[in-house]
Image (cartoon, rainbow, N blue to C red; front, side):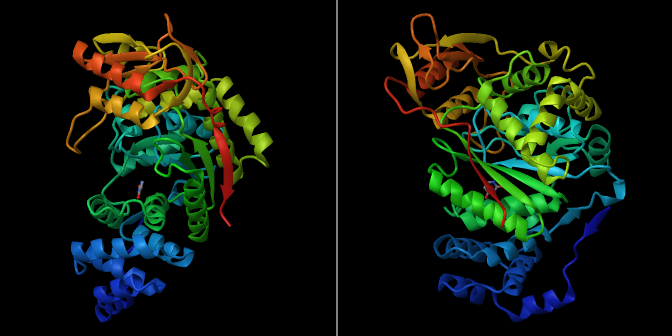
Length: 456
Ligand code: URA
């Protein structure tokens, strides 16, 4: 089931004959590294013969000099092989193993619906998700608001739930791509996060280690996105799609808008409630629906579950409207330790903050611009995210009924509701929200899905 990728003795010998500082020097001077050099460096960092200072220097050299696609593929492969690589073949699954990854949104609960929808269409989704990062929300923090739901099950339970429910959304395990864990922590404190080559290898090494057959990437663009300009987002999307496909993982990237929160809710329990309402049809925010169904349709086509986007779209809509996706969601929640009647009685299970107040814009008029990052930070300040890795998250707090670009606000129409622990926190968040919303004349909102980029 699990193939332990032991370093070959050839690699070990090679790693001893080539000095890490020579690899760093070569990259520093702008030359392309050989795959064997990259492998030796990654092997050395896992084995401890390459120091953290050398990793930092390497990351900075890559930040300034970049890497060509061949180098990125070699780095991705080496980091993938630094730990275990899941292999689903032994389970005899009757459908493809698929996943989606996003570069991080605000009010972005797509995964909670996408996994069950794709499972209802015959795919298998072993989704390994993260916690909130900076101003962006994390799927794991949202799932932690479901009582009993195990976000860190052992691998046997993970496999069992994927097989039986078609989807399991869990947290990162220490065994998958451990080289990335080390490199990421060093990048985080050495101003080397924003390198397209390093982001590509970091994301894809974890996805390849999860043993997928195909991947769909949701690359955000707009205020608060990792890559705020469309040109940068395109470059990241192209890099990920090309490197993934080159490393044997067929991938399509959609560039989606982050010029406003995606759902009308932002937080943890409030986003889970929004997801349940989406699945059951009680409420479906239009842009959220478009992004979710577009990503699902791409996954079906990549996985051979539909012949084209039209057919795939019809299938995912049926999976949603027939209630089949809701059933898969319920099964996943119950199998991972959550309540069996979670969907039916989610109001009873999800925590509610003691204070709920409307937040009003500074003036009446049309919403012209939203600082999405500031909206995300307002959730963090309420306690719904972290300012330090060890912080606990308050699952009950957040924002709901958020106005969209183009909506009329003012008078008795707030820009949203704040759910807080205290009156004071509610007031601060309401002020932050008012400051994040500019009222007046503005550009038309971006379409929810801007572009599609397939791996070459
Ligand atoms: N997410 C990752 O997993 N890695 C990065 O480098 C950036 C975002």
